[in-house]
Amino acid sequence: MIREIVKNNIGIIYLDRGEKINALNLDMIYEIYDILEKWKDDGRIRAVLFDSLAEKGFCAGGDLKEVYEDYLTNDDEEDKDKFFRTEFELDKYIERYEKPIISHWFGITMGGGIGLTINSDIKIADETTNWAMPETRLGFVPDVGVCKEISKLPQALGQYLALTGSSLGVSDLIKYDLADFYIKSSKYEEIINKLFNLSVQYEGDRLLDEFRKVLREYENKENTSKIEDDLGKIEEYFSLDSYKEIYKKLKANTKDDFAKKTLANQNERFLFMLSLQFEKYFLCKDLTYAETIDLDYEILKYSVEIGSMEEGIRVTMIDKEDSAKWPIRSLDEVDMAKVKELLGIDKTYEERLSK
Image: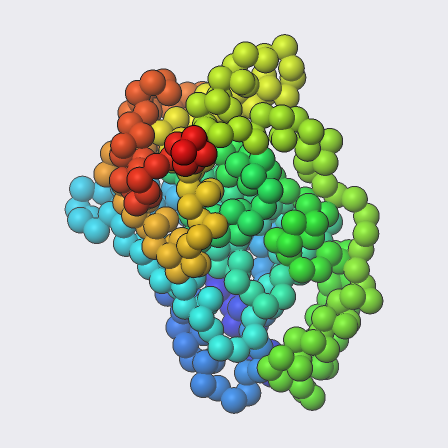
């Protein structure tokens, strides 16, 4: 499921689980950690490249079907949080890794795959990239520390992406500083061969700088935005001061196709976690990456405790039903005191504004 190769001082970690679009399981996480640990003090390795051998993309995220079967519904497994705890420790380890890391995003690039590589020194993407954090559909919230990056986005866009799980194209990733270089997929092998040549001569920051020069020569400017046409609507509906206001405005404007479609999207999701994610966007602006991912872990543990993760995965990936049986059914049932407790805040965003 993981293939490692060393070529001209570049250590390559290929995700190689094509039938699952590289959905990460615990064995893959352990193996990636072991490879990085082995390379840490290896003088041959001047940089690490994360790549994929799957045709459909870089990584579909964590293998949540396996999490469901091996942990959430397995009565013999007492440590229900083991997968996420181990995944998050790997992500934090990568963020601290001392050697340069380069990542290749293409096709399906979602969830845990983004978390694995979000802290890379250089993130390369191409016209096929379909980037998303779809966790609200699964009974929890965008995790793996990615909310730190989402919190840097303009308010309406950050809220829209996190609450709806909508996708971005590579043009969007470049515009909003989520990826570093946009290339044509047909040029990738040519570009990477130049990295291999550079790595014979350079290392450290100099290697990264020289490789950036190469990437600039190959930059693609074609428009692949998945949100450009909706930016006005996103601003209209998602720039409000509370999640309740967003929901009410969507519900009041169902003759608007965008509002109708987005309301249907929100009605599939767990309203407690949507309310929490609205507040989390603002909180993460003031957190470090490590603090963000630690907060993610506490929220995930709560979603396991109350069963919303199990239900979200069941309805989406196991039974593939139309609607989930969430613990609550209406916004009026959302316990905002619990939201504040989980986030460690005294006031909601709206309450802070009204001071």
